[in-house]
Length: 272
Figure 1 (tube, rainbow, N blue to C red):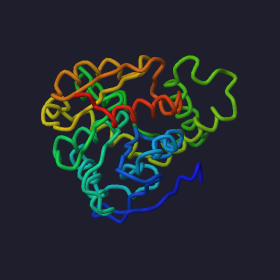
Figure 2 (cartoon, rainbow, N blue to C red):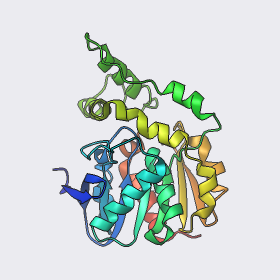
Figure 3 (spheres, one colour):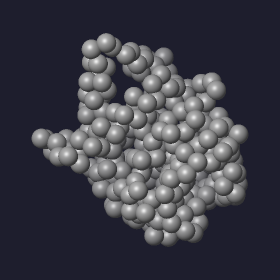
């Protein structure tokens, strides 16, 4: 247990969904990137729980949630989120989504506008690149007898770390963080590619105008999806955007208190 964070399962029509929760008040749902888990948000949750009931779920097929019966689209991932809220008896929630989680959060807000109070997307999944080209970068997992696939996973994760985030030689805390991300990717197995496949084919620009909730679009200045902030924000009616100095693929580890402050400030006063 970390800082009082509790874990539980919700028995939904999509199988058992594992989630972490902390705090009381209005619900705030956190959706993680691929192929991480709700553990990604543990550093941020205590600060967010100062005024909210924070719920961080494992996307179906990732973390400790049941795998989907087939390869999901973003629309199906979004419906699984709504089913999760239904199981917990939650009619409306604010949602924060990071990378893949941002695409799922976008679709929840677009398809089920009456379920979303506020929407925050960090690194929304928009690329001006054909989906087949993106798929070619998303190589299938190949288990090797000598275990070298584990080294490849380690290098993939460390390759996403911005310079200076985890100074080398890595501290024990940094190594623990990297190891967790590698383990979640390993546990996802072939499903690691499925969420990427879904977001590569998700027409986010078409869905953005349907969002009714006040929205904050965030991007880190050292994040791989920083360039998506402006074109995404331009298609939402009630929107603010902000570039987070030093923010990266691992923004929840960069400075969780500062990220929580961004989220809480917007939730309290969207200003749009």
